[in-house]
Every structure is written in structure tokens, then in C-alpha cells.
Length: 389
Image 1 (cartoon, helix red, strand yellow):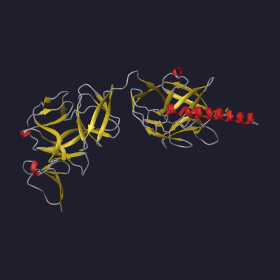
Image 2: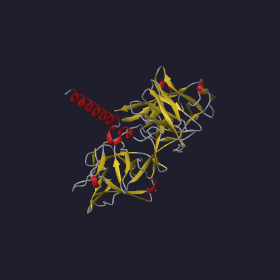
Image 3: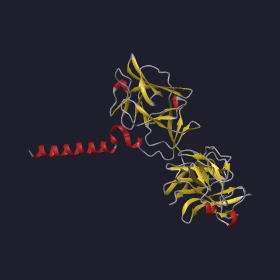
């Protein structure tokens, strides 16, 4: 009797050990690897199917729409917007589906973060299961001119083609070719050296300026960047750089975002510049340069963040390294420009009458009005919106 009890104790320990080992490996799916961080990872377009190997991680993309297959969806998969540059994708959104390839003798299993992809049934569908579903999970992969053909085998007479359906913005398997925009595979590659980054700190004002003469920078999540121009003696946003966009080297910008620290990735992509940008900068502490009036990003009396004179009469001042300053023509009649938070950062107005010289009136299309405010209408008087009834 004692020997029987001992046998069951040993058996229980062995089973527990096996279960623990399986749990530590996330079962057969290897989800730990697929859910790893994509920071500093680039996905490169696959143009030759022979370069695909067992264990490769890919994302499924429609190049034309700039969409990748999402983790979300039951009988089909939704799409996620991505940015493609030079047949490569970086800064992958968290909800993009990562697919690990498993090689069989001649075909492939496609393993997602939630299970094996498969196509089964009479209806068009793309589903997942924690285990493979025979031929319904096996797919052939062919690539021609960068276009991927992924065909789930199903029954011999009813295979299913993975496609992007632009009408509903979804990825799905269909029993026939819908003639939709084709799909491509982008394979995960890792650099031997970590990506170079630049630190940016946003203070309590919600704004910070930045300039690097030799580094193109990608806008981090949670940030937006602006360049500025002058029109009708008012300052306006000239160009907007949103999350994922590239700010070219030697381009001064003002960032807007929540208070905190951010890392901007240095990229080899050139980005798109702005010939109208009036912001300037230097890589070292240096006196502002140019023929005009100079303004520093700051606040007026502790509020009203914007650009204001840092020296008497808008004269030159020492601008800090990697900070941007504003230079405008002498004809611009203002000591400062306050960001107008009531109408959004889309426009920047003169701060207040005590910062402007004289009374200057414009209509809503930017035309200067001489002789004061006419009757009825909406006007800009010394940078303030005025309604005349």
C-alpha cells in the first residue's frame, strides 16, 4: 500500500513538472516571442520567397492602402495604418498582427499571436485556433515582383486566397480572387546596433523647440511638430509633422505634447522639408543670425506660451544648443506671438494690444482693413478675434 502511494506522488510531481515547463514556454504557440517589443525593429519587404525560413516573423501588408493586418477580428482581420518608406516599415503599431512562419515539407503554417491562422467552411473567413487544423491551416506562399500569394489549401477543390478587401478595410480569405489590391510580406530584421535616439523634454507649457543640423528625426508617439511662416503680419503654422513622420536634418521645429520625456529615433530617411519655415537653430550655444527680428519660445508673465523678444527691440540673443528660435522681417509689427489655444495650434496670433504697435485689423481671409473695424462681421484686431454685430 505504501508503495502505491509513493508511485502516485512521483507521478503527480512529474505531471506538474511537465505542465510547468509547458506554461513557461507559452505552450506550442511561442507567444512570448511574438509579443516582444518592436522598438528598434524594422520590417523589410520580401521579394524572393526563397529568403523565407522557418521561424521568420512577418507582417501582412497592402502597400497601396498603407495598411497592415491587425490582431483584431474574428472571422476576418481589421487593418492598421502603417508608414512604408523604401520598402521598409519601422515603428510598428502595437495592434499590428505579427505572424510567425512554420515550415512543413512543402507548405507553411502561419502562427499569429492568438493562434494558427486557417480558412475553413463554405463562407469566406480567416480564423485562428490554438492548434493546427490540417490542410485548412497549411498555406502555399509564392512571391512575384514583391506581390505575395498566400493560398490556404482547405479541400483540394476549394482552396482559399488571403486578400485585402479595400471596401471594408479588412484582410480575409476568399474562395476566389476578388481583384483587390495585392498583399505583400514584410520580414522582421534586427540591427546589430541599437537605433540612435535624441532625447526631448516637454515642460509644463506643453511645448519645446528642437534643431539638429545633421540628424533626421522621426516624431515619437504622443507628439506633433510644427514649422511657422508669416502672412499679413501674423504667424501661422506652415507645416505639421505628425506621429511617425520624419523631420529632415537642419529643420527647426516646435513640438507639442504632454509634459514628459520622449525619445526621437534618428533615421536615414530624408523626410520632407519646408522652404517657408522661419525657425532657425544651432548645434551649439550661439548668437542668433540673420537680418530681421528675433524671438524666443517662452511665456509672457508666466502664461501665454509663444514667441517673444528675448532682447531689446527684437535684437540678437544667445540661443541654446539644439533649440529653435524665430526670425521674421523687420516689417512685422509685433513684440511677440502667443499661441491661440482657443482655435487650436493651427494658427498663432499676436499676443495682446500691449504687445503690438498701433491698431492692426484684418478680415478672416487675412486682408488688412484700413480705417478701423467695419460694421458687422468677424475681424482680427491686434491679434484678437472680434465680432461686430
